[in-house]
Image (cartoon, rainbow, N blue to C red):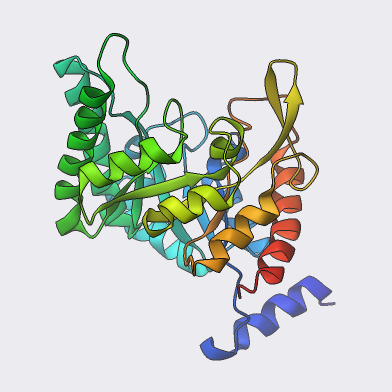
Length: 299
């Protein structure tokens, strides 16, 4: 007996490439499934019609350059597995911060970013995410921005011949459009762009979705989307569409400017064990965000 799932899977495999159903540009970050091994991540993503995965740690290892499945002698196998699942890697999430003023610490952060850029080249991933990340105490704002922008430009120069772009995330002390725009303009590199964490510019930056898109849209290459509600003096992440973050408007704003990247779900399960399990949250996002994307006229 052949099950319906086996029949559907076999039928899809028999389709010619131009007959295969086109996936919507949905993705998710592995931050949302910190206990899943590499095979489960791929299987789940394919089963729920995601087109991309963003790598931000695998199991206990946050340094992707030390993940066994992504080691140099396994890269070809990993790429084959991705292709077999109809997936691409949208971005590699480094932990590198560009704000350190201590030369030794700063050099270590740049070294991490370069290792991730090398891995991105090997995997065929277009972007490596880095952070700003803070305004260092007693350092004038202008000097701080010049320092971070200089580091971004240096990384952009390193990434350019490798076909990789470094994206700074709207995160930490840098969640407002004016500061982000100034950083990107000062970096002045074709291989430095923006990862728009739309949650952070709304919650921390106090900006409506249309504002950062209008000001920063030409720099946006990748996104982080998630929903939340107030919880005392903090926020609690909730299933997409059930909180007060205007995720639907964020997607619509991106679609309106012709954004061609992935709409990537960043469910912060690794940092917040109390939130919904990935099997629930990622699957729910795939359904809800797909509807938002279709209503925005994408796909």
